[in-house]
Length: 243
Ligand SMILES: *[C@@H]1O[C@H](CO)[C@@H](O)[C@H](O)[C@H]1NC(C)=O
Ligand SMILES: *[C@@H]1O[C@H](CO)[C@@H](O)[C@H](O)[C@H]1NC(C)=O
Ligand SMILES: *[C@@H]1O[C@H](CO)[C@@H](O)[C@H](O)[C@H]1NC(C)=O
Ligand SMILES: *[C@@H]1O[C@H](CO)[C@@H](O)[C@H](O)[C@H]1NC(C)=O
Ligand SMILES: *[C@@H]1O[C@H](CO)[C@@H](O)[C@H](O)[C@H]1NC(C)=O
Ligand SMILES: *[C@@H]1O[C@H](CO)[C@@H](O)[C@H](O)[C@H]1NC(C)=O
Ligand SMILES: *[C@@H]1O[C@H](CO)[C@@H](O)[C@H](O)[C@H]1NC(C)=O
Image 1: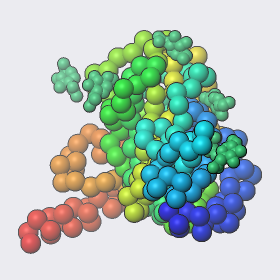
Image 2: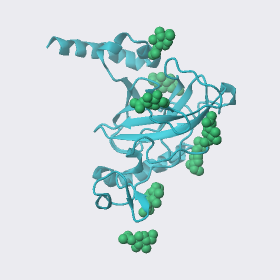
Image 3: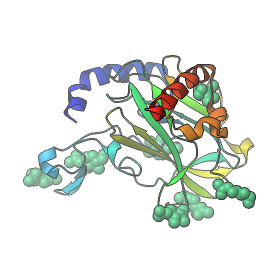
Image 4: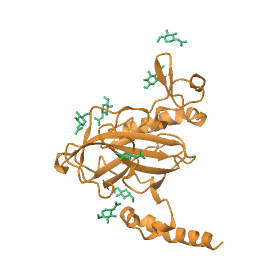
């Protein structure tokens, strides 16, 4: 993670840009909220003997950064939950806080209960984003209608945690969560163009498997740009099958 440390000046520049342009600075998840600020690195790799986190002299240290700790980037369950619709709803995030995200895989999962035993329930199929650069960059993406996993029904007042996993170009995954309480859609913070938008310099791509060609998930996420790429990818896949 030396690359991360080296990138701090550029990261600071990106941070400044973000502060200028966004209400919820210091956060990966901008809607519906987040557990708290975990864009934070402290201690040394010598202190932890190479572990991601260690208890050292009375406090935890995260020499590689809190964000890389499963399941929620080093943040414990919060008491201040955000309301989120029982019908599913919007999730917005800023994917470019760190180096290494010129391409990234994004996973959106849910864990059931007040303190979920795991986050192993995908809400959308994994998808890829393309950023303007491999250095930190500003901007958000937003999926306005992330559904609940198939056949799950919830009631107002039920608790859960939405987890975002972002796997960088080199495979390192950073974790972020927001704790929610399900509510009727009319009781939830309104989704607007200000809190839910796609920045123009961040693109979307399907993580391609030949089976997903005909799946409904493909159509759900599709944008004209994506559809234009699909036939080319199909040719690539067919080509590789024939070799
Ligand atoms: C919960 O509280 C933390 C710490 O005060 C704050 O950073 C975070 O934004 C809050 N989250 C929500 C969803 O209100
Ligand atoms: C441990 O922490 C205390 C205060 O929190 C400090 O005075 C002391 O120097 C620290 N010891 C080491 C070995 O870092
Ligand atoms: C390192 O950061 C964590 C998380 O913010 C904090 O709990 C801990 O006290 C910090 N450790 C030191 C030694 O500052
Ligand atoms: C949901 O979480 C809140 C805050 O942690 C808690 O007070 C409440 O009892 C929980 N609700 C349920 C249904 O467990
Ligand atoms: C994950 O948690 C759910 C409860 O939310 C439980 O039913 C399931 O068995 C757990 N899965 C694993 C792999 O632990
Ligand atoms: C959802 O329920 C329907 C009807 O019971 C069933 O056919 C389908 O396989 C279920 N889907 C999942 C993902 O469990
Ligand atoms: C952002 O782009 C994705 C992928 O094309 C799309 O599913 C989503 O609806 C877009 N978000 C908004 C707010 O238009």
